[in-house]
Amino acid sequence: MGAECRVMGLFTDENRAATAITALAKTPWRLEQVHSPIPSHKLSDALQQKKSRVGYFTLVGGVIGFFSGFALAMFTATRWNLIVGGKPVIALVPFVIVGFEFTILFAIFGNVIGLLTQGGLPDYQGMKADYDPRCSGGHFGVLAACPETETEQLAAYFKEKGGIARVFRPAEKNALNDSGQEVI
Amino acid sequence: MSELTYAEIDQTILDTLGPAPKAYWFTVALLAVGILGGLACWTYQIFIGIGVGGQNNPVAWGTYLINFVFWVGIAHSGTLISAILHLFGAGWRNPIARAAETMTVFAVCTAGLFPFVHLGRAWMVYYMLPIPNQRTLWPNFQSPLMFDVVAISTYLTVSSLFWYTGLLPDIATVRDRSTGLRKKIFTILSMGWTGRMEQWRHYTRGYLFFAALATPLVISVHSVVSWDFALGIVPGWHTTIFAPYFVAGAIHSGLAMVLTLMIPLRKIFNYERIITMDVLENVAKTIIFTGLIVGFAYGTEFFIAWYSQNSVETAIFKWRALGHYKIGFWIMVTCNTIIPLLFFFKRIRRSIVPMFIISIFINIGMWFERFVIIISSVAHDFIPHAWGLYWPTVVEMGIMVGSFSLFFFLFVLFVKHMPSVSMTENKEVLVQGERHGG
Image 1 (cartoon, rainbow over the protein chains, first blue to last red):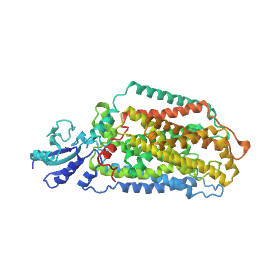
Image 2: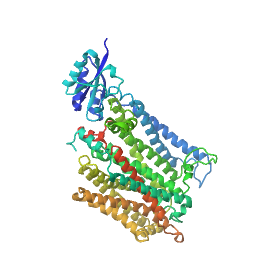
Image 3: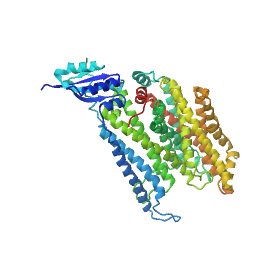
Image 4: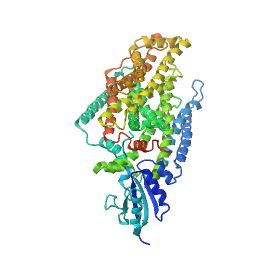
């Protein structure tokens, strides 16, 4: 089997990009990646993306925060175990505020951890290979892989769907994307 | 805005990051002088003692606490615009959300300085942190002041993370269109964001949770600030209306500050096609609403003082309106509740100059609201022989000018070096007419 090549179809219209993604499933070529300047529902539907699991991280963070807040307030109260004005040393009502704030804080920490781990960030290598800077501007990039001998056909497929094609040769896979690009 | 293209949005916003004219650096230098002036006053206070301020017995809380509450209030509308309006799917918030979030972060930073200043011995601030120590003393989490430490720290952390998460796709856009040192800096800041759909899948979900969590947080934070006062038994403070009253006031002042900042920004950076008149008009309409709530709260305080027939409560409210600080009281009432009613007239709420002037009046009015609440109540306490008056000193005024300079200094630096309007969110509105998906 010959070397594999990657071709990115660049579209200015998200509907055309979505059509290209859907139709790609009926071709022998493999969809690798889709880049978008906005969080597009149409592309998400075309890719049949599942719901993100970031929420579980948020939930776990929130639960940890809730108990941590109460635990901290109770711990500090018992370090000075003195009843003042007949009020209990461990007074749950005021501790609700500490518990609440800690719930939010830790839920956000969980959310950020979820976002980073699930989204694969930081990912400085990802922007060095098979990425076109136009995808952060006005273009939707659909990256597909094919045998090197079928590069022309895949590029023609993207053109037919209303985009322009950029070929990433295997040799330049680890090179910076601006070097030696081939736009068809 | 619907006639704009992706490229035009990018170009308009990226143009703002170009080389700055001399006037810009002059403004930055002027603000830096203001900060240095404030810093000099604070240094003087540290060396001489807290007595250089006008605080006395019984008025122990002066402009430091007024400014603290004022800046926390300003911080609130950023989260209102970015989180609450996001959850409601109000697309008009997109052009101003970034600037409002930025305002939030810098306003909380500014507010956070005042407890240090008010503390006098600023190096003792670690007493408020729950850390093991040789004195075996721990913070008392039954105190509203400790609620405040927890709430403000949480708010600063959450709003900063929310702000940075929103910036991430735009930082990548700037990175991809930069060269040299700027490209290197933005490459690091972008964390390798490439807009992969896999990244967006988690980003949109995470952003939604950010908004959902920031909404109750923002309400809790100013409620907690209000309880610094309401949990005391001082007449004029000890009232259950304080939490919603403070939250409404905070949003009122924050929205006014949004107009104060966005109107010049719109003109200087040629944002007219992005920050349209409709966007500013919606802010003005929201100000009418918050102004009415604030007005209702002012009236309710007087009504309850009369209805309770509590002589101390009645006396303090009479004194507020007719006593030594009556000028502050009437400035507060006029600027916060009467002047914003001008926004009922369409011609006024769609005219830039009147809108800007009204926003300034509301900022002034909201500062005086905090003055009236904080000063007048303790100045006119239960026992007549313990009454006293307070006026700020030059040192306090210097620190106050320094705080305003610091806020505007940070904001002015930000708008010239980072995208001050969200490119991604405005593109979203353009194409989909809807918000971030969940």
